[in-house]
Amino acid sequence: MAVSPENQTKIALWRQKAADGTLTIEDCKEYVIVLRGGRRSAAEASETSRKTKARKVVKSAEEMLSELGDL
Image 1 (cartoon, rainbow, N blue to C red):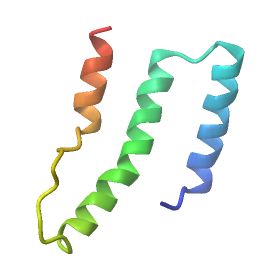
Image 2 (image 1 turned 45 degrees about the horizontal axis):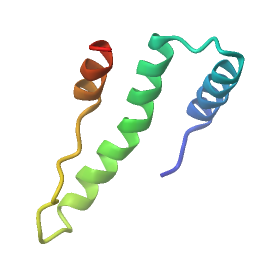
Image 3 (image 1 turned 90 degrees about the vertical axis):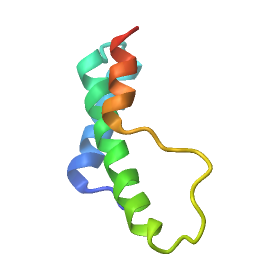
Image 4 (image 1 turned 135 degrees about the horizontal axis):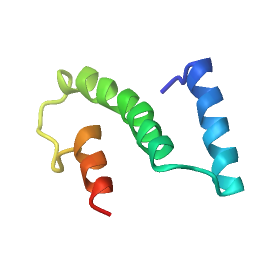
């Protein structure tokens, strides 16, 4: 997966915030959305080429974030 320069900058900022101990829940939510966005498009592109169904369903970013909110 190719990461855009904008997302590379965001990831570097999140890593620094995590190292400093200043990473917020909002930062984590944005991180999940950015990272899952690429996986979603990759999954959709490869779905047509697969002959068998996936054994495990990949959760959407919204489902993962709703679980995060329950913490």
